[in-house]
Image (cartoon, rainbow over all chains, first blue to last red; front, side, top):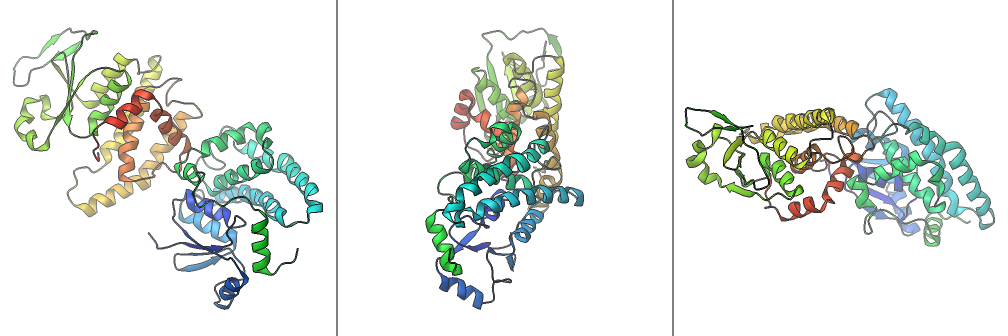
Length: 222
Length: 220
């Protein structure tokens, strides 16, 4: 046991949510510090805690970790969720990065002007069904996991994505039965079942308050 | 055919006995789940009445020699003593129709039961030195458990039960073993979703749920 893990971010999903998911599946307890106003963020900057003046920030194992992917890969490596060799690792990275590309589009969605939202939504759905989901449908055919017959961070990332997609497009997995079956299987992991219950550390979908909070902290004008 | 063996007697006689509807069962073991729990699960599942005779540790030295091999569990079937926990369970599974639907499935259940048993036997139950014991258990769960779980998961595939299309005694043994292994290393199946799902599925069988909820609570 290596001591406390502390997450610093907004009180919302954003880029930190994937880290919350991975820590949960890895069985690692964590605490959260929420940035609710600009003063708190400026204090963090002045303390020199943020390598690139950005959050997410994860303090673990005596280090102040930034850069979402670096954090995710560290957790994956540490908790045996990164494959068994270099070739499995690159496959995991390929699948996980594809998932993150699509997630990135969805993450930016609350911040784009209302007039562009409908077009953006169509773009997300189209990319999901024509470019990304077919890849995972093929990868999971005849296999319990994406890579190497073993749970990896790519599986956790994909599971999170399927939930995000279904929030926006409830029937999107109808034509992807293999991915749907994968999602059903993953729900059986006790850590995931618990995380999906009310009262867990899972954050709700972004709403107007979340957008306001982020804009205030970063001094963004939309 | 059951072996009619009275401890201390010099004659061992083979006496054909068939266990019919009015069979009396007495299962003697310590007050724990241990190597008797699989038999208890089968009794519960098949709704067969049995005497769940539990021996206290303090009483064991004085009665040990009255049991064949001086070991427990022992199942008395109409007064005839049967030893060896897996033989007991296999017999009860046969009576309850839990051996599989053909000879090959039966062999598969035996194979998986033996595999689970191998892991159980590898646990250093009797290691006196706590640090050594902890280290050996750590190593088992680090190196051997993943292989066991991968093997079980491969067997299970995307079906509901470990062998064939219906529950067999090896599904029950998986729950028995899971319960105890989870005490030694909580969350040891956290990377194996279909095996977790099988545990949940077993706990939803009413007769098993009833037994699990009502049985005496012991660590092992």
